[in-house]
Length: 350
Image 1 (cartoon, rainbow, N blue to C red):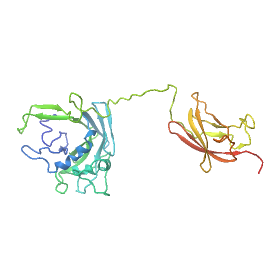
Image 2: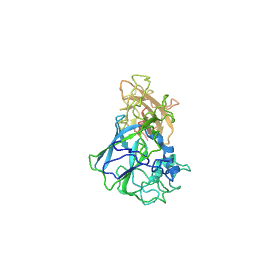
Image 3: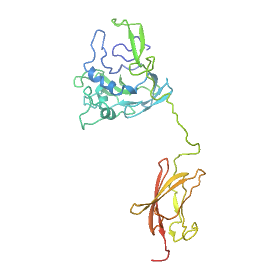
Image 4: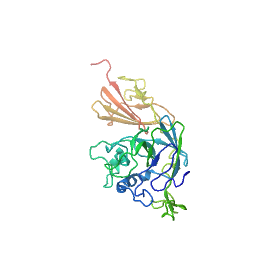
């Protein structure tokens, strides 16, 4: 926005030290009095598939160590790198269609995008079983093209790299990576910049028209950002319930082995084996070596007591036989542990 008509026709801005900044936007007139891209029908596939990932915001891109950090300064959130298109950024370094350069159609070869959403007659992309690609965190200077023709008809327009940011594809024609500390800014809109003077080579009198056609607010305003401003509301059922992650490796039985009796027994007909080091809430299941469920205990002690007592009886209220048994401990948070213990009902006898 610091140069005259920075986005007229196929231009998408201006950066010091960069020969050309280009983005494949379908059905864009390439020059005054000219026509649009020959492959606009295929180029628009990208917008059909994933335009919902973009948002209206100002972005600050900072170069350091051969890569970038990105911040959405409108909503005060960091934008993170991801190998697949999300609310993220990434560099396209893979010549997916084998044209010998990075071109607009290479983005259609991204693994998650093509497999999930781009399977339409509008799209380029790999045949079944062909290699797919992902975005990378660092750019590679190589041959690129800023043409919007069919891949087989395009020629390289120079050296540079391609970046996906805010779900827009940008091609930067340059012979080198920007120096450390270089800061770029990107302003994106949700709507149109139009002029009544569109018949002139140098139009003026631009007006912003917000886009409400995609389901915006009641006033036809732009769609809100997907993540910034997100609110989470929940209902608390019990203030005393604590669900947390526990290390269950110390859960075991005492005594082990159980030899005919234990110090926890109350009488010959009231035996007791204890599970210790339990979290406040847990379900304990006891199995035979063959996987038969013997009994199930529900442990719930909000005071933090870590012990649960088993009476050595099965679900039919019969004392279990001597042998090796497995126990499985599970918490409401999904933590689990499997252990084993031994019961000998008649110690010293064969």
